[in-house]
Image 1 (cartoon, helix red, strand yellow):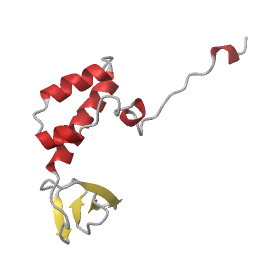
Image 2 (tube, helix red, strand yellow; image 1 turned 180 degrees about the vertical axis):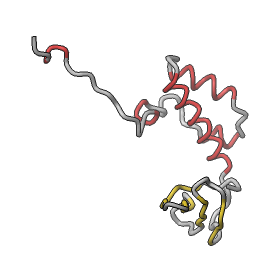
Image 3 (tube, one colour; image 1 turned 90 degrees about the horizontal axis):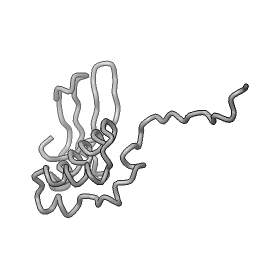
Image 4 (tube, one colour; image 1 turned 135 degrees about the vertical axis):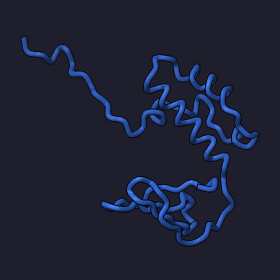
Length: 122
């Protein structure tokens, strides 16, 4: 919202409560369960960071493509960074291909580990 990043803090049956991602900031907001803004409380103690939002969008696209395609991550990275119209500041804070590790891309996903074939009973 307004080039600020919020993280979900609490959810109830009727509302979602968010806090500014900046730990020193006290700005909060509330939405209904359908993400319609109900109200805000406080003020931001820092300037907006639109570049962080640009980078998050880019990383999200890279992650989605890596999950859904067989294309190598470095190729996806190159294609998406050239496709996005990023500001010079956003370009400066984009992680490099090496910094975008498989653990970062797939953080939070469930993994299915196949059973060892030799452990099957004959």
